[in-house]
Image (cartoon, rainbow, N blue to C red):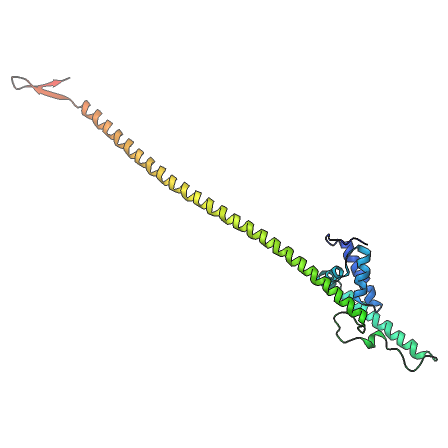
Amino acid sequence: MTAVRQDAWSPDDDLILAEVTLRHIREGSTQLAAFEEVGERIGRTSAACGFRWNSCVRKRYEDAIQIAKQQRQKRNYMKKQTYAATPHVSSIHVLDNEERAYKNDPLTDEALSVDAVIRFLRQWKGTYQELNRQIKTLERDLREKDDELHALRELNERLSLEVNNAQTDYRAVNDDYKTLIQIMDRARRLTVLTEEDEAKPRFKMDANGNLERIE
């Protein structure tokens, strides 16, 4: 049993998927058959190949798809002309793929057989499982992001509190500094006044009423 790959799609895988799918469209085969062939070649499920084609690769090959459909129509037309020109062909012709196809069929351009329906259901079951797996992965990633966001919010609140405390301490220190400057300024002025008082001359009166300077 071939191991089913779970790694990311490479450019080579996408190229193989595009080439095989376009060939099946051109030859009038089904996309389901193309996805099964690609899955066997690159070791992936047909559902994973279908999901990759519809979600990513198809939009890059819209022009090539239209050309492949035109080639298929031309091929079918030439086939009908060959059948009509053959003398021994019975008047009851087997309807070709183009005439038996349902209009605007989302899966194929040929009539749906029981096997095609079964393959279709299997493919979309696999696609549904693949989508569920991706949804669970996204939910797990979202939970991890929520946890990170919660942790960052707690860190932000803690840092904001520390900043507020630091600002409060700064204001207190600044107030103390201003008070100290005021005290030092008053002390300096008192010192100057005291020195000026000491520098002033002092006098006393003697017994005769004369003033004498005291040194």
